[in-house]
Image (tube, rainbow, N blue to C red; front, top):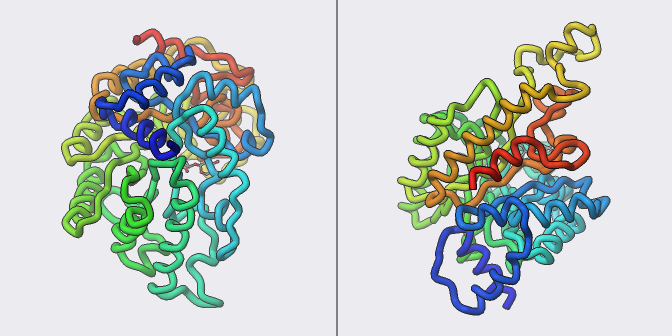
Length: 377
Ligand code: XIL
């Protein structure tokens, strides 16, 4: 039964319509919510990320909002290596278990994020006493981590971000994974995941996916894997977008089309829209230094002006118009958080600003972009 439900959620996310009667009934019973996901149920799954703070506090008003509005969830941090295996072979399941339990309780498509990444991975992983770990040791650690984590959540999680952010434009990102194992680490990670769960849907996830060089490089790696008999099923386009600095809709569209042509299901995996001036020119600067300066890079400390809010709604509208147009290629759209106050965009790429990238405001009310999206249906 457990496996049946998991399979149903996976099939419906992937757009496989033929479903056995028992599964169709399950769908009917799940369709009580009148939130956003319900509105888009014939297009794609719609989801959000749940923070550690929410899992820790068990914040029921936010969790109820999530259960009402969304039908797929990702753990913002709770399933990263540093959270699950902070020291070697000492697994810490507490938060991830709570996350998975919430997904099961609400019949949500639950995403495993992420197994192999250069970031939020403890130092010990790449070390052997004082020196660098050998290739063999690192491969064994990778296999053990992937195997242990997937195995624990097999009954509840059918979609995994197996490798995260391994590629920069047209080349491999320099990382300890690459340095110690070589580029083969990519294929190995997918092979280890596949051997633990042969029917899982396995994803490569990354940002800046509108970049044509990046698309080409990723597709080449996926095809290389295919030749070796290792299947990659989908691609996660993070889609951390901005209000004024792109990416342009047409470039996102080309990416969706190219990935689909390469045989990959598309997941919009971490959607948000940064409304603040680009902070890259101001790196290292202290926001508090002087008022004028602070106003320039953190201009909406008290509220988002209505003109900007309208532009944000319009940006979300055009994004969703595009997603609906390509709904046959897209399995899921996940926002990277629910309410503005919990967004990582308040602190990245510059700490301590007030951002407004999501669909719900700081008092948890739906914002203009929420209605702009809903009104498309
Ligand atoms: C971010 C989280 O939102 C932050 O809380 C954390 O401090 C750093 O990671 N790409 C990813 C996500 O794949 O896991 C990242 O999440 C954002 C960028």
